[in-house]
Image (tube, rainbow over all chains, first blue to last red; front, side):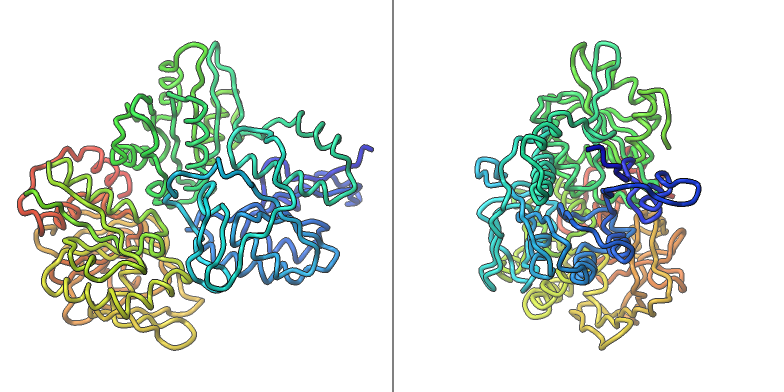
Length: 354
Length: 240
């Protein structure tokens, strides 16, 4: 008991962030006294990071288009991952999402043991496919995939009618989710699958998940007087759609959207047109702010859902007004890009992190 | 007018990477807000060429490499010749990003043989090598052609490695104010031919440039009632 763990907990997931987490645990001679390292790694940095470490487990959640202006394209990343993962030794085990065709297909490229996690619940299928769908073509032969149903984006029960490539049967598919939202169901299943690949009893897993607190910006709840503000980091079309759907399912009628275009957000804001804002019902109060307030306000104008939309370029004013408008005992839901999330959080908790 | 304005959206599942949907949404809404009917017609691999040729306005957007290969073979063989015929007859069309390169004669990658384009337009694109600067960032340009739009400042975001050169029958769309434009050297951005427009300003070009949207619609529907574009112009101004 009591292993020393190195972890890049703040979400600094590039090579320098991972190295920093080692430095923080090092003594004055540079010795790192730790037993276990757990790292969240940026998709583009994964091949670079893997040249420096041979992990015992690699967990791959999904691949959505995210900050394309920095990294190029999803396909390019899959190609780089395939090459990097194929080099890992037989001892490295993989925990892969069976419902993401691109991720699941990596299973045939690696030497080590593979465990799959996925959702087997047809009741959770989407009624209509979302627009922001990345990969509905077979990663092996390039033909259009057939889906029995989709959960969100391109995640679902898929098969290729042409080459026979199909969704592997998940080894782990049932576990109560630690947080609301189908994407958190996936995160939970991935965590459980990873743990079951080690000799750890289920009771320990259960205990750990019950005490789980969301990281900042990931559905964090902040009390403001007799109201609450819940912040959802929403930085790409798939993430935004998932946050929006979760927020609407929770019965939200007061929403603040914050769109920034700084380096950590991605400079290009074109992706907002791939988000299905059309799902926001007309009895909703939407406030819009951020560096690119007019772009987001324009997106809401053309979504034309009848929702009440106000915009203010000054984020602290917009946040103030949105909280004012939210009735007592109710929750204001904030969907923000990365730097916007940090700003909102800083304003509410009285300290800035940026 | 009782017949709906039919907006053909070429390959919404393959050539739609950077919010390209914004263009067809804006075209449709700006018709509807004026009391015109509008219909967005998705044209993909399985759609017949008859459905395409029954449309009034054409839009085609950006793509990733793998998706463009899939769309590419279908476009070269089936849909491309139909689009060429429609463009020659004066159909309004908008080609952005990858589509802008693809309607040209060829794309010459840094390594390997040139990839044939659809030959709808007289232009060609070349990748100058992996040491050359990729043109990325917010952009602005002053439109010079078509004449009805001259003087309008268009804004957007570009992200391309290919450098494009226009042939003799093409007119440049705009003069670059901010950004790299067609090739980073001659100071021009985009191209026009008859009633078709092409640009490197990728993804949602029309939301912040409503005058271009209205120009395309008016080729089909004639004179248009003005709309309140305060928000559109604020978004446009913010990028300049």
